[in-house]
Length: 350
Image (cartoon, rainbow, N blue to C red; front, side, top):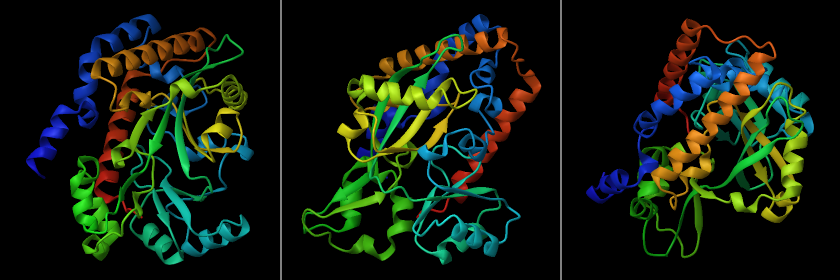
């Protein structure tokens, strides 16, 4: 890695490790724990989701909670499912290639891939010993993350942030190779190994002038997407539509919806979008990762959302939802870290 890239990583907090960003906020977590009367207050944030959505949650179980009309067609493939059974299920669900695959228990976009044919799907299955989901590829090209919460004793909820996700890409100038273009920008240079794995010999070809190449077509910050805070674009129509959907998701009160949409104007009107994922208690207010925001802004947003989560958890507990045993909770968190480590090592990129 070039010295300038290393310097960029040091001087731009969005590239810092999760531990580095969150450690100074430990007193805030302890304060929230005191208010909620449990150190693991995340558990009560979403009673219908395993561990509130902080660890080891099944994406399939979450999809099962969402009205079908708002999500992609989805097929569950266990580690025991044969390849022929998978193909048969895809046919019965009329899910055609290209498809999107993702681990059933996963995070940060790790293990998510776009597959073009059955050979790539079989290869994905052979290299992954975990349960995974297969989904139709949504026709929309744009993605946002919408953070939502609702207090259990209130009928309506609120959107507290919206982020536009710009997929990692480069634009050719007719002179430089793809590799040179990638290495010019620290954001793409940090993803060089993944890009080389995907692009292969294309890395050494000159990219024609004004030709845009999407390097990684997923809206994950850990995979190079740029996050742009567009919270100011949230309209009453959009807020009402998101609230309408979320109130139909039993036991869901706090988290982020990842949404694919046709264009911003239709989205603001609450139209032409699909929910590709709902994340629970571990959700970050990802609009904080907009490069224009300071680390102090991020800390303020994290603290605000933790306090909301603790209040929701407290109210659900008062209504009869039991708090999580500390031993079980810390074991789940440890197992989740192990899965993340494994996914980082074995992720197959499209």
